[in-house]
Length: 432
Image (cartoon, rainbow, N blue to C red):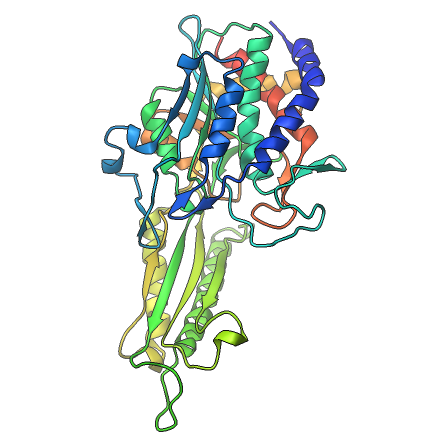
């Protein structure tokens, strides 16, 4: 049965509630603050929201360590920059509408944690957690990455319940913790706790396109340390780690140029594969901390990989290039620096294009009056963990937005309503 009119009417009559709920969620600070995080207030808010239309027995708030054997799982990554991650009082949330019989199961997946805010004030609205709307956009940290998408999954469940649509297969919405900063242990916990779900829609921002592949990558750190006490000496020339860091930074730029040139030689239309330098740190952050020669320094950077690149090959290519480049420098003749992975390697993901869920999604787009476009997304996510932990395949479908992790992060509110329609239509088609 085609429920297009009923779904459209439901969304039209519930627009204000959807927007106010999203605004409230954005105003709750669920910042990922390694080694811990403050996701719990947001999860409790969502659980209370679900309790209005989901039976208590089908609302599951659980912590990572409630999942037997998770810390022994091969994909569990316990640290960040060498510091043990903390998971106490950081629950995952899963809500379920049980099916009436034997049918395919589907989960709408998203994460609740956000990156921090470094600025006291933003431009459009001063409060970085305002959740306010201007010119069709809602603003606030995490609104596009990814509270709008995460909430949409729970809204879709409410729509199906309110319209009394009976599905044969089980339908889930989940909100996981610890996706930012290369966590993903929340996603792993959800997959191990619910291992038999047939398909997932991961609602990271995609501009309503269907992300059937994602890139991979890893955050890395290189450190240098000199002997001595630093400071200032008038009897000898003190060693300075900043000179070594500068040589390393130039070598990173050469590696960036080298591998992109090699990719273009293989494919003249190859897209740029970035290497981002996040921090170049030594001797303090402003003049008040200067006045002495430092003895150590660090560079933090991101190496990106294409969907099908093997992580070990990426590591080997990088380490081999950097070793050759730095051995040419007199300053490294006694010791080469160590390059350390500070988070897990986020692997690329590719959706099985023959998966029957994609046909259901195509029909959902038709019924919602939207163009169906598959795309290869140019970012890394937790999508790779789904098939490495369970049989659950996944595609990424999320709203339109921008300025993720930055000032004036926003989501296009009309795209949120469209996403909810896509989710509900997909559930009806796939789980029936």
